[in-house]
Length: 226
Ligand code: ADP
Ligand code: NI
Picture 1 (cartoon, rainbow, N blue to C red):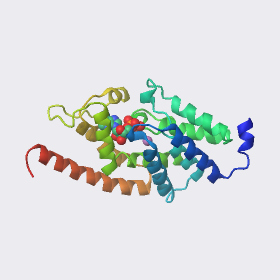
Picture 2 (cartoon, rainbow, N blue to C red; picture 1 turned 90 degrees about the vertical axis):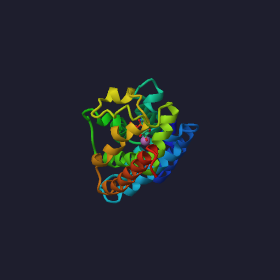
Picture 3 (tube, rainbow, N blue to C red; picture 1 turned 60 degrees about the vertical axis):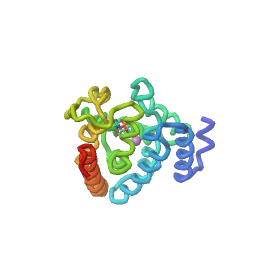
Picture 4 (tube, rainbow, N blue to C red; picture 1 turned 90 degrees about the horizontal axis):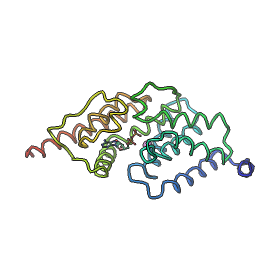
């Protein structure tokens, strides 16, 4: 209660600033796929995408900032740690209950893993934040993040004998140990057709083409061509 009183007179901008500070502090030392810079890119993308959508910016910004506050991969697969941590923080700065519930629903439902199951929730704000996160998984940065993740997991770059698995369930996706190139076919190249927003669709198209060129060059080099 004490903290709520202290934040009563803060503007939305102040509340966003407090959230930025909290997220930066919480993510100190995080691996590079989910560090503060990922959050900053998603936050900025989310603001950009909001310009051509009819959404509540305050919800979009808070959800973008808090969407990776705790990754279930590092909490024994517990997918409620993130929403809980975000909810506790938002309560501590005096955000309204209905807004907290909305932001928690966005965090819970926006990941690619969740999209492999039937979704229980959607909203315009969630569509924007989900697109912003997806844009960071494709293109030049998406490629860098995929190989970082693969290196962290000691995966092969590519293995022509291991074919990509399409139509994986959420469980299969989470337990896959395939080479990183397979991840392009299992996730990255599928994202373009899952985009929700006008601007997101346009940007994803360009990044998708870039990944196709990258793969073409990769196979050329792999096969000893120029
Ligand atoms: P999401 O939260 O959308 O399910 P993740 O947290 O699983 O995404 O992934 C974080 C980053 O690591 C993304 O850029 C993603 O493409 C990459 N990544 C996830 N799984 C793999 C994998 N099996 N191989 C390579 N990169 C991966
Ligand atoms: Ni993310």
